[in-house]
Image (cartoon, rainbow, N blue to C red; front, side, top):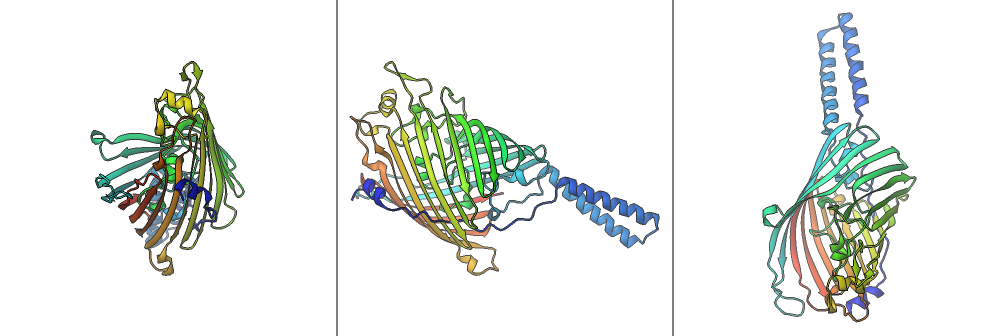
Length: 454
């Protein structure tokens, strides 16, 4: 049975994981530290007036010094350590949300990863693969935030990709926005935003996802990392978390047989004749469980015309996701479905013919299971987590009349590997990936990676 049909008829088990993230004690605020210092200073003055002993006075002076150091840390953001086990905040990963935990002032964090990829010498049909092994410093990311007060803050991510702009790398702003959150249930966010779809688009720091490489479904179908200029609302009401934004739309000029990924404008002088609407709703009311859905809809033509016809090119994309964690166990599943309107017109505008056609429909899903065996020995600080992930996707599940689909776009992969963390902020990864597609051109590979966040 062909991959395209196999993927459609397999029942996706949508029961998954969310792990009891270890609760982090709240850091004292700057105002609380100031009050504590003032109280101790008043106590010192009183004791001096009463001619108290030097040992008592020395101890109080020492405590004042320690509190003053903590107060200075809250001003610089240095009082906050990032523990990935404590989870992220407001749709952001642990390091990306560092500014929310900090006191007033500057906060700095980041992450990075390097990946070695070793390809098989043959494709699945026995033909030479022609692939060259590579070792890439994928990215170094710096987060810079500033907390003006308890309601208003700025947050940003600056990414350096592939080590050098002189050798094919680039420097990009991944997000940069201002939050105004007067209450937990409602906040406003504006700037360059991460589109809140899937798991990895918002939560892509290496120590918090399994595998040396991100899931293909969350690259080809949900086009991570997907960011765009816009504004919207976010908040948490009881067991429900939500985000809803209006953003600049995709550009049909970049959409092709590989999916909508090339249509991302990424905030760089984004054409904004067409806007998109995106939103997400998650339920977290059961310990260990996260379940929700997200969507994006918007036209992509950006004012283009083809043979006198206006190009609409509406893109609809939605996903269902669920995760369950308990102790060392994590289970995750995601399914995403998309459609592209005016595909024949986009083909004409982009001079795409035959099997190079834009897909009128796309779909992808994956299931993943992982277990941290180190939890069997609670005294250890290490994490040793084998995992397995199965993916199935097709970026040309349908094509316009007069075009053909490329058999290689209907594909699946099986990834199995291990992640080892000597501490929660640093991970070493190794895995094997078996690729298969209807064109029989899949190439297997081994991967090694190191990742970190702070």
